[in-house]
Structure formats: structure tokens, C-alpha cells
Image (cartoon, rainbow, N blue to C red; front, side, top):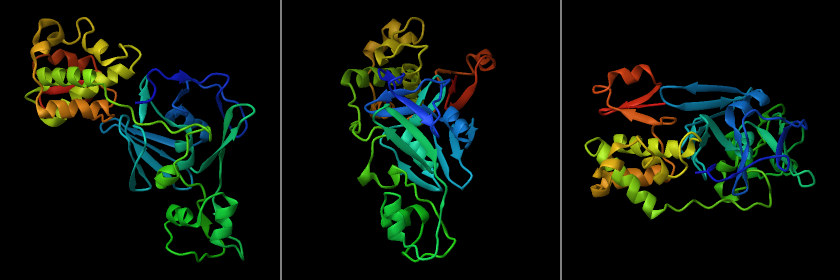
Length: 315
């Protein structure tokens, strides 16, 4: 999961818009050669529309030419113009803000990322649709926009190379439409980041916690407990390791009373722990869980994200 232990972008790595330097309210950060931007702030500055469904955790960004990108934090799956795709990394979250690689978000919303090696700056420029003129061919248009005929056909949902005068074509192709030609998020020379390996000690410890806290819950409830731990790891208000979160004072009683050490995780508990460590998250933003029947007063003090089985997950 990007963000933890990564470097924050400073004066030596900036993102500007239409050539204008931006002082970002939310910090940018760099991880594995990818520059991440806060989705809400970036969208507002670009003039795009952002909506958030609190119940489902679905975030949707759209522009004026009909582009729509929907996603949830903690998940690598996105829906782009009604079709589902997989990202190379889960959607990151920090301080309750969703973050995406700047190139990925910009290209999905039909903007180009221009990299300046001299200033070490990425400039985001919105690109209008191309209006087909008399005599133009798809191959010529593809060459002009540094893409391919096949990708233009894929991007615009067309089956052949015939064009009509006045036809509008989207010419910026998001990289997730063509995984074979994967680019870096900002700097062309940076290598793509490999998927992180799961620490066996973290997996065992998290699986034990899932077992003692949600051993009798359905799989979704087990995944949610594991997701709460990972949400805390990514939250600056909590320790930034699995072990640190679980053994923090007065947080998870089984960690202090000996039950955790004796726990033997089931296959589902281990599977849920592994899924959460890999980036799956079915309770985005939730950093607490409790049994509302046993502690009814807590519901008035928190924002409920989801109820699964006997547990209420909240932030």
C-alpha cells in the first residue's frame, strides 16, 4: 500500500496545472517513482466534479466531456465509463483523503501530464476532444497524439478506422486500458513499483487478531476487522505497523490478556488477513469496531461506516 514510509513531495518535485505552480493544501507524496495527489483537491483545481457515497464508500470523479472514474479506497478496482479495470496499486488513503497517482487520474479525465526534467515538475494540461476534419485518418490522429490506432479505437469504442467529419474523439488513453504499455505515474525514467511482499509475522499476528475478534463472524466481518487494523496503520493518529497497532495500549484487549498469543487462526481468518495486507478494504476509513448491542452509546459518538454481523465499523 502506497504512502507509508514514502517521501513527501517538496520543492524538488512539484505538480503544476496549466503551467501554474500550485501550493497544495494536502501534501503530495512519492512512492516507488509514483507521485500521488489528493483526489478531491486535485479534482477541484482541475474543475472536475467529485461525488462521494458515504454508505458504499464509492468516490466518483467526472468531467465535462463525459469521463467518469469510480473507485473505493483500499481497492485496486476502478470503474471507468461503466467498465471495470484493475490498477497496479490499491487506491491509497491518508488523513481521510483518497490519493491516486497523478498520471492515472489526469489521463482518466482526459488531461496530459508533461514532465519537465529541468525543473523536475509535472504539469497537468486538460486536452479537448479532437474534432475530425476533412481528410484526416485515424492513423494520422494517433501519430499526432503519440498513441496507436488500436488504443484510439478502444478509448472511443469504435470498431473500424472510418471517420466522419465533425466526429469527436477522445485522444488521451489512461494506462489501465492498456496494461501492456504501463507507464510510470509521473517521471518517464522511473521504474514501476513491484507489488509489496507480505511479512509472514504481520500475516500471522493479524490472522490471530481476526480469529479472536471475529472468529464467529462471516468472512466479510473478518475482512472488516483486518481492514480496521490496516486503516489504522495508514492513519497518522495510530502506529504505522501492524504490530504497533495491535499492541497499542488499551486498544485490543486480547493482545494484553493472553488470548491473542494462544489463538489458532482458521483458514478464513488467515485469508482475510492476507487480503487486507494486500490492499483489500471493505470498510474504508473505519478505525473502530464494536458490538452495538453491548455498547449502544458508542454509536452516538462515531460515524458508522458499515454494520457486518454483530460488529459496527466506524470512524
